[in-house]
Image (tube, rainbow, N blue to C red; front, side):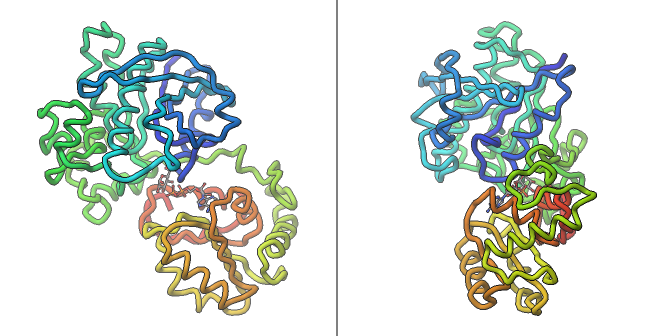
Length: 409
Ligand code: ADP
Ligand code: GLC
């Protein structure tokens, strides 16, 4: 039996801002339970829905030393679908309205989280063989593990030889602050702040630290694993990743096939499987057209787009071609929130092409399910896409993905 701990800043169904949460929520369920004991640790954000908060059980508390200050760590626990989730409790850090904020606050919050989660293992006596870290928020975990914890006399040999895997879901976000602040907040000595460790372009870089000290670095598709070693996609870390090339590999994400299953999906107007897809998708298309104010017509091709509306997602490419797509035979449904420029452009098109274009500017899981089920094709025009989940979900729902050739797409 091997023990695995996933550490991340978000996971479905507790808290989600993007695909990272989908993966951290669904990956533990996919392990073979006879061979692996897989657990997850997350921050206990105040914005986690109340019904989950009520199911969490208090386990213990202790204090950790962050740069000379002793800080409280509460640990809560909850089982979900056979997976144990731990939650690190500290109201000072985790009571914001949003899980990611600006400035030094995020550095302090996630440095605290990484060290608290690592210390927790010894306190609750769960010894992972592998700690699986996700994105920059947990980049300090391998650094603390290999340096402060491996050889620490305070823990005898509890942490000795524990391995760390660092998964990069999106290299665009690296956790970069000035070296002085990172030194002060993390309590790490000067030794780490050099170009072959945590320093990059004179600043300190949390993800870079994670890459250096992890035993393996994975990213979420094969293509992205080599793309990030090129100047075009490397976000300034390409040379560093090439240097560590022998431990970098790509493993394509999966989706949760229970949540995303048109044969059992209660949100759909008509459920279907591979056999009944052609027939029953028509009912879903009709329901979608009705509910979104599109002309109800089975002969129109419906193209869906479900996305964060940011520069990464290649929306400029779409905006330029919309007038050409709106040929009278085609309808477009956009579901997303993000940058005002994209929201406004899509609203403009909705007004211009009434009955054929729908701009649903919101984050809404239920509507997402209905779009996957009701559309004929799903557009994913990303400039870069480490993996991408919407194209995988759309295939599961019998909608043809139309994608730009990059990363996992
Ligand atoms: P990223 O993590 O870069 O945003 P992914 O394709 O990996 O991209 O994951 C996006 C996830 O978020 C998918 O599960 C998708 O269905 C969901 N999603 C994105 N935007 C919305 C929205 N406006 N409403 C509901 N779900 C959304
Ligand atoms: C990131 C990437 C996306 C990937 C997701 C989960 O958000 O942008 O491509 O699917 O992480 O790994």
